[in-house]
Amino acid sequence: MRNSNFKNLTSFRCPQCSEALQWYQKSVAIQEALGDRAGLAVTLHNMGFVAQAKEDWPTTLAYFTRSRDLSQQIGLEKDVQEEEGLIVEVKKKMG
Image (cartoon, rainbow, N blue to C red):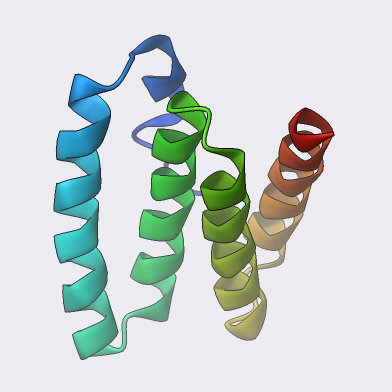
């Protein structure tokens, strides 16, 4: 199971979210440049929680889906299962 540093971010509202997303976007660029798919999957997972805190469900879904897809590509089955559970929850919120 991945280490989700921002799993409790939903207790915040969004001045912290904007700053967190800026740092995560920098991290994404670095991880993509390095080809670090595992690190990128974790970062996208955490970005999903930031989007969730903002109640931006389409963006949340996009981050969790991309994280799931990367996790699947590199064989991280527990992470795939976690993302799939999160995706189901987001889709419920989206109606």
